[in-house]
Length: 550
Image 1 (cartoon, helix red, strand yellow):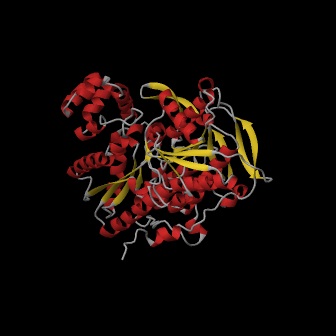
Image 2 (cartoon, one colour):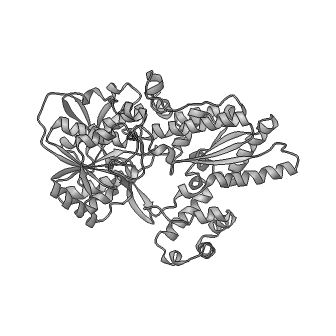
């Protein structure tokens, strides 16, 4: 008997037909809105993007039947995985074939390097059908190659001309879509007749603004993490003897931690943006954690959960200064890279940092200090995902509790377990919301291409309404850009969206967290993602988005 390769859920999901905006379900007409400008640094951005700056917003409505020209399109999955990427490609494929059956879709393999190295495959109906409504990026693979040189752009142009490709769709986060904007500008300037369209992908949730209400994958990943947190909280409430310190993926912003806190109601959740606003030190953070642990111990509750955003370390002002200095110091330092032992590297770094940062570096546990000088990401920055902040906080909390116990101020027992939830959520089978949203994003990209647009990001809005009422269109990528320091240089990049402390999601969290800290009955157990059943269980977007749109 041949072994099975698909679960019952995979087989059932294959037949799921994503819901779409009504405007995309028939003939389409493009409506042009107001001209745009960048979110900041308008003169600098306009000078760098003279061919794609200031373009208008566009939206789609139902219209009359029309004939679209044949277009061949290449698609790239860029950066980290996010649930729903396959449905972007499915929606893109279906949209292209609906607009003109002669259209072709090619997938560049392994991320942006596939464009440069001419590694590709034609995506046929048979291939696409195998991946509908599935998690992961394995249909063509992803990668983190940064497109930043004219040589790379021209190599991409060569393969596009060979295959008759008229447009490239880059599915990625803020950095990847910045690359898409630069590529669109270059091809427009050189008159290569190659359009470039972006799609907003990142589980981190930090690629959003008034036109991009959420990035795809955020909803699914948070629901996966929240199920795990709920399971741990049920266990903690049963065993009654462990404090669980849970670090959650999210490179910079705390959107994932905030969403998971609202979904699961832990005893403590740290929000990096609040810590920065309050100018808190590591000691201040530990004191807040210890305060809750002592209170609960006094009431016989020697257990609990602490949620920690992955990027926390960069938001502690003194640590932020240290990391900034390290980024500048190590971004292209051959002397440092030539050193062999950790002690040699530690001494070298301490000698070049400012006095304040050098003292902070000395005070850190050696393991954490070492993690701050490990390999940089492709943009030259500290890889915060490698810094085990949860273990640092456990160590410092245990020392503080031991001191209080010696003083007779703490009578409880502190046993801790550490967790990092990251990869568990990146390739999950997308929730109904993400399956629908990503399919619509891909279909919208197909329409933008067929309408001759370049330098745009696919946009689907009004996401808390039923899918038929969603608004599809495009937003110029330059509208989201500002100038920032990256890898020691000032560069144009898409502005990250951080947690707004005056926003409704954070205010809801702040209003309820003291109750969650004290009460043993406050935990919520979200359970696994549901794909079949009532819409209030299966089709709802993230709590963050619902609160923002109240």
